[in-house]
Length: 222
Image 1: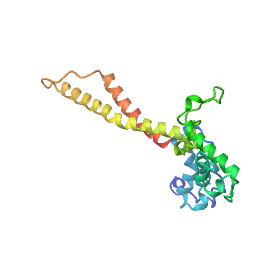
Image 2: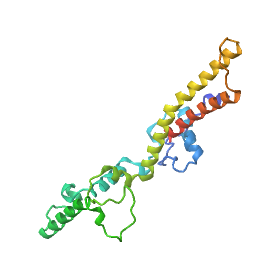
Image 3: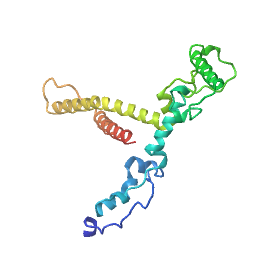
Image 4: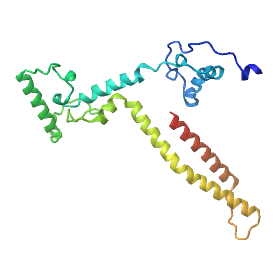
């Protein structure tokens, strides 16, 4: 029993260069954060050190994500507005013919925004927020959409669901409190007390409040 409250200190360098295991964890483990259990056990046995922390997945590192967003965003900007190292010619010495071609392409891109109906009939399938008649629209939203399509919109959907549950839970809670008040005064034989709903109605409200709060917690943590 003493081992439970005073376990032996875990060996040093717990992480050993491993990445965060949340990617390979199952759905239940991700919802309950069960994949954190090994690290919590180490922290229970001794103070955590920097060597005990897992390495972040390469795809989620700030440098990788930042470089990807920068590249995708400046691809939607005219060459003259890009950093020097992202222009067609890094030394900024562009031949006259090449500069004229770039200016014509930029002009045609701007004209296409107002003449979309004249696009050729044979073209690639239209994908919202991916394809756009204006090639250089300088849209950060579309760059984020291309960089993190599923994570970007899934997070927005979860945030919307959490906001809806946050706004509607107090309404259901009020209905539950009203039911309890009516049931209490009716059981006491108070004159003029309204007839309360059935017991199943009260149980349904209680279960709904618990489910809404748990659902809000899950979507926020996801």
